[in-house]
Amino acid sequence: MRLTFLGTGDAFGSGGRFHTCILVEGESSAFLVDCGASAVTALQQRAVDTNAIGTVFLSHLHGDHFGGLPYVIMDAHFLRRRTAPLVVAGPPGTRARMLAMMEALYPGAWAAGWRFPLEIAELAPTRRWTRGETAVTPYVVEHESGAPAFALRFECGGKVFAYSGDTEWTGTLVEAARGTDLMICECNSYDRKIRYHTDLPTLMAHRPELETKRLIVTHLGPTMLAHRGALPFEHAEDGMVVTL
Ligand SMILES: [Zn+2]
Image 1: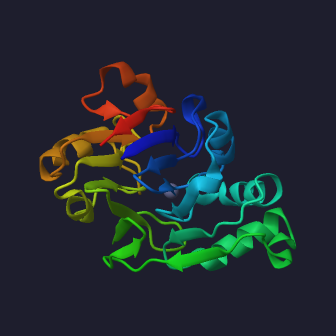
Image 2 (image 1 turned 45 degrees about the vertical axis):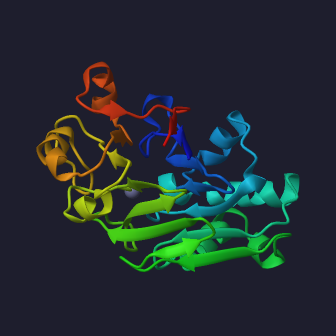
Image 3 (image 1 turned 60 degrees about the vertical axis):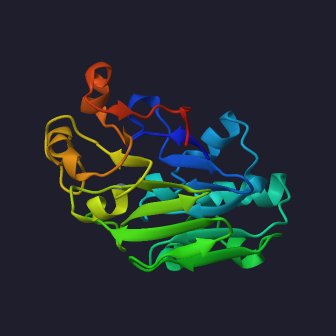
């Protein structure tokens, strides 16, 4: 399984980074984890064939994590002439928020229909959901986004990895990370505690609780970027590829 970090930035694009978007390529399928507002540009820059992506998993409903979907969907419809089904799997409320976002940005586009089946799946906390060779289990985390926010644990091709989404430290991260080959954890702030986000001292204090073979931090804010040459954890960069 191959993970490509297409976007590793915070909401503000700090450091010129794209919004959160991770491409996961397995034996016979590919999926995205989050699709932030600038994801369509990151996908184009890396020449990713989005027609090969079957599912877009969403950790939570903030623009820097799901705001790229209208552009990815319209690109699929108008330019790539997609015919294969696309599944968007996110927290409860995903359907209503997707429709509202699309209507605000491109009124009438959704009602006119797409040339491919677009399915929205709303995931339930701790309920394992399977699609093809991929299974995901969501865990509720501490992040206010108008809907439950999830950490997501993926099983695919015999490998397991977890992604925190955006959150301050919470015990469900321990559950999501248990026995994983990789844990991708947001770490927005170098020193200051920020509500609903993780800071480095807190993550360092809890690192022993995370039973994972490898920890990579992402969603780095300006203070983390200022210290990125001397962080105690591996950190993600746009374009970085990890093979599990
Ligand atoms: Zn967020």
